[in-house]
Length: 213
Image (cartoon, rainbow, N blue to C red; front, side):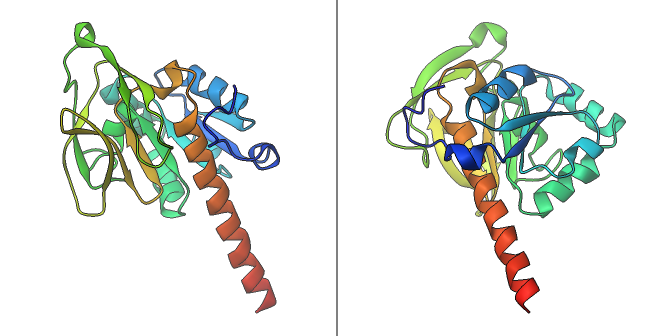
C-alpha cells in the first residue's frame, strides 16, 4: 500500500512490530492485510497467550455483544487490560469502539451508542477530517456505526459527524466508529504503528536506564 499520506513508520521499524488483531469475530482479515501492507507482522489473536509480546492491538468491527461474549469465553479480558495498562496502543473500530467504552471493558472514559446512525440500510460513506493524521480527509465507511454519546475530560475528540464524536483518543487508545480497513487509506493503522514504535522506544529507554543504574 502506497504511503501517500506520509504517516507510515519507517520500513525498518515496521518490520519489527507485532500487531495483534482480535479474531474472535468480525472483519479481522482486512485489518491483517492492511497491517501486512505497511510492513508489520499481524497476529490473529484468539487466546490470552497470543496477546503476550505484542506491540499493539486492533479490536475490529463486527457485533459488539458477540465480541464481548467471546472475550469472556476465552478469558481475554485480563490480558487485554494488561496490554492497555502497559501503555501499549489499541485501535478499536466500529464495534471495537463499543467494546472499549466504559460500559464494557472500560478502557476509555466514554459511552458509545450502538447502531447510532441506524441499521444496515442506513450505512454511508463520508469524507472525514481526522485530527492527528494530516490535513487530507479520509474516506470513512460507516456500517451500523456507533457514536460517542458522552465522554470524560481526558478523551480527545479527533473527528465528528453532525457534531457526534466518531473518532476519539485517550492516551494510547484510539477509537473510531467506521471501518478504516475497507478503504486504501492506511493512516489510522499507521498511527497505531507509530504509537507502538514510540511505546517500544520508551520501554527500551527505561531498560537502558535501569541497567545503567
